[in-house]
Amino acid sequence: TIEAWYMVNNVTDQTAENRMDPNKPVTLSDLRDLGVLHWHLPPLSDYPAKAVPWEPQGIQDKELAKIRDSRGYNYADIITCSEECLPDYHNKLKAFFEEHIHSDEEVRYILKGSGYFDVRDRKDRWIRIKLTAGDLIVLPEGIYHRFTMDSKNFTQAMRLFKGVPVWTPINRPADSHLSRERYLQRFQPLE
Ligand code: KMT
Ligand code: NI
Image 1 (cartoon, rainbow, N blue to C red):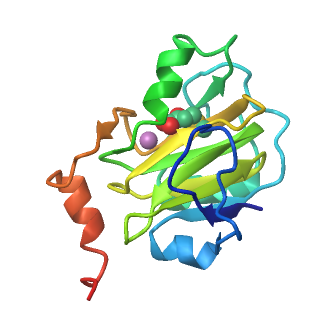
Image 2 (image 1 turned 120 degrees about the vertical axis):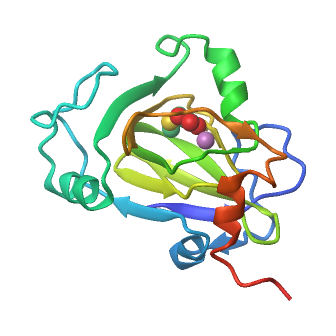
């Protein structure tokens, strides 16, 4: 399952754990309050090795199918983050780690390897979420976040989407973006 914690403020190595001392853990329930959903599924063996459009007859996993159907994810492909496999690797990694939002959910199912998604809490503090094979995460539309691989430098993930995929990041500041406003509407004002 996943582990999450508050990050130190000064990050010099983005691939390191960057925990506070002492560690300040964040629970799944804390994440749910921010709109971040998580499932742990059994490891898959029968997925296509390359990024291909979703084929319903492809992956048979029942748990995955249930989540896909109930949440309407009718598109899927596979991204492999490694220097050999990802075109324009260095620029992509830089873009992934720029703080941004999307106008849709970001849904990732880790197939192999591991990585970190960082999300902002309601007081704008960074939470680091460690994902390993079998972890499926949904980041809600409009949440400020970023992604980095860990020191092992390998993440293979299924990207799921409702409809025609749009991966475009909207970098911070995006406070007046409709998706950001929608995200904030789910909270009562902080006193
Ligand atoms: C993203 O949008 O940040 C990514 O696709 C990162 C690689 S998938 C774990
Ligand atoms: Ni993103």
